[in-house]
Image 1 (spheres, rainbow, N blue to C red):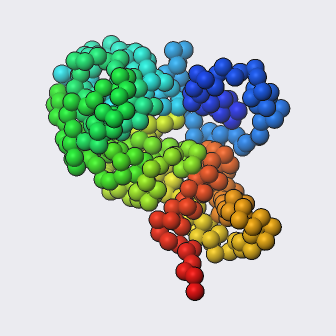
Image 2 (cartoon, rainbow, N blue to C red; image 1 turned 90 degrees about the horizontal axis):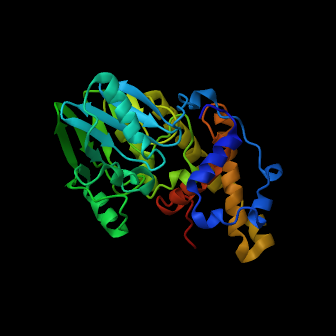
Image 3 (tube, helix red, strand yellow; image 1 turned 135 degrees about the horizontal axis):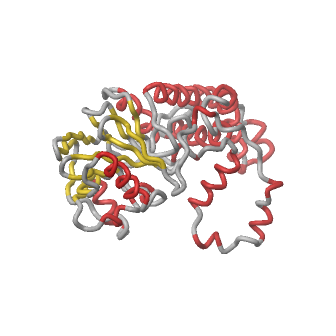
Length: 346
């Protein structure tokens, strides 16, 4: 994403997420309502959130450290490790697709090493990160957490072959003189999300938790376990690493990025707790009766998110786009998971 034009980014994101059925509506009533003149304006993407420009084929491949590389289409990320026995690939996003092999070929040609993918490590089961796995055929060893295999077996998606090797808590992959440590530290974004640590390359890969330079995607990244996701950065920072691969957007992350993200979430939590105390439900129920909850919670979200948006505009991309939806998810978690704001009838 070389441009800081927010509309270009949103248009691309929508195109990636769209399903064929929606595409058939183009030119109809929905298209009329989505005319350019009705689209909202958002703050520009801060330059600090952007990564290197992709090439004419739509990807960028770069060295993380030594023989560890990352590849991105500016929206999704994967990584690969070249070894004397072949290539270990970490995730296979379908939006990158065949460009994964092209990126590997480029690096292998320059360095005179094998371009044959021998292993694929799955970060978690989601199709947007694994949907190109089948491109690498059957003669590849796929590795994932036990729950990843169970979930993939239930989803029956031929583009995401089941892992051949699974682990429960931890697993050390040793191949071609290289070592990669995999660990499961509980549910966060999904029940099966793996921490992938490269001890010889000063790097951690943890997908769908931190999007370096950006706030979380809509509704707190659609995290399945909100308290677990809030706790995940502490676990990540307990590892020794300098480079971070988050699975999304166009650049690598740093420990500073993780700290900024933690503070952003902490600020939302503070705002949510204040909103639960300070936003009076009385006028909403007086006007709407039993239908008051929607507007009451919207007021709580506005109260909690407004100061956070103001603080992080120009610091984190999409602060004005997604903060409110993330605040709502965290508000509900604090209310329901932690019991904050609950009142016992006298």
